[in-house]
Image (cartoon, rainbow over all chains, first blue to last red; front, side, top):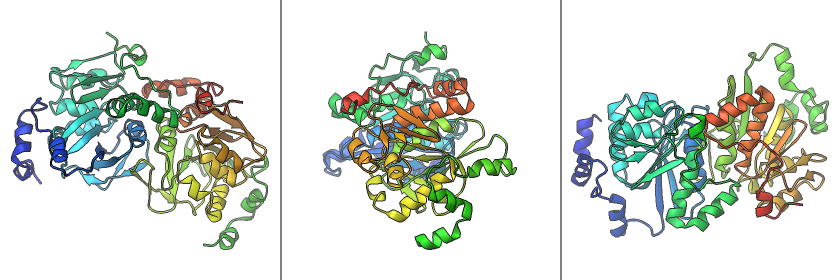
Length: 243
Length: 243
C-alpha cells in the first residue's frame, strides 16, 4: 500500500492525531478503547518494533522485565515474517507494522538497522503513526533516531546511545538532547541511552505503572542489579557526552 | 528417531565420550575439526538451546555480548521451527537439536520450560550429547537443571538461579553447588546464577577468549555495567542461598 492509500485507510481521529504530532490532546486511542470496554481490565498491550539488524538487548532487556508483569501481552511488530538481530538470531514477527493498532506501550529498539530505516520515509511514517496510536512510547538506544526522524522528538527532552549521540541528535535538532542520562521521561515518551539502559528504563516504567515494589521484585527474580536513578549514567563519561 | 536408533547413528568416538560424561579425555570434536582445517580460522561457532518458556534474558543477554565478538556465529538449536519465550515473543530455530554438531560453545538458558524438559529422557540425552560435542558449555539460570539431569554436573562445581536453587540442586546431589556465586567456572563448564548473571558470565568468557580489553569494550558499547567478579553475588543474600 502506498502512503496515500494507507492514509485513506486510516480513520479521521487518527488523521487528526497525525496532523499534530504528539500533542497533549492527541487522541489516546488505547484509553478510549478501555473506556469503551474493549480492553480486558488489567490487560496491558505492548508492541515492540523489530527490523533486520536490531540490537538484541535493546529489545530483549525490556521484554524480559515487562514480560514478568501480570496481564501484559507483548507482540513483535515488523515488516516481513521474521527479523534478524545484529547478533544473528531471528525473531518471529507477530503482526505487520502496516496493520496499526492502539497500544499501551510502543517499544522502539535501536541498532545498526536504524541507519537504513531513517532513509525510508514510508516506514518512518508508519512508525510515527504507530507511536501516535500508543499511550506511551519507550525508545532504547538508537531507536530514538526513528522517533527523531519522524518529528516526534521536536521540543521534547530525550536521550539516546552515547556512542551514536551526534548522529541521532542531528536528526532532530529541535529536541532537547540530554547527554548525561540513563534515560529521560518527557510526558508519554521515555527515551533511554544505549542498549542495556533500556532495561533500567523498562523497570522504571513498571515502577510507575504497578508500583516500585513490583519493579524491585521483578529485578530480583531476574537477579538484575537495577539502576533506578535516571541521572546515574557512568557511560556519559566513557563516551564523552556529559555536558 | 528413538534413543537406540539415535545412538546407532552416532560414531564410536562420540559413544566413547558419552560413556564417560565430561571426562577430561572426552574427544574435543571442535578442536579436531579445527586441526583438520574444517573451521575457518577465528570462526567461533555458538549454538544456543531454545525451547518453549525459555527465559528471555537467559538467552539474549549472552547473545548480545557474544554477538559483538568478531567472527562469532550464533545459531539457535531447538525442537520445532520456533520457540516461544516465557515473556511471549518467539525466536526462529536455526537447526534441530537432533542434528548434533560440534560447537565451540553450547549455551543453555533456563526458564519455566526446564521443568517440563527434565522429565523428557530423550531430550535430556540429546542435550547431554550436544554438550559432550562442545568445547565449552555455558548454562544460565535453571539451564543448569538440564545439565544436572543429564549427569554432566556430577563432581563439578556449579551454580544456578537462586530462587530455584533447591530444586536444581536436587537434580544433581553429586555436584558441588555454590550458593553464593554470580557464576562458577569448572573446566570447560561455566554455570551462571539467575537470568542477568548470564550476561556477566558471557563477558567473562569473552575476556578469557579474546582478552579483557575486548570484553570491556563490548560492555561499553552496550552501556552495560559489567560485574567482572564471580564472587560478587548480592542476590545470594536476597534469596538466602549464601552459605
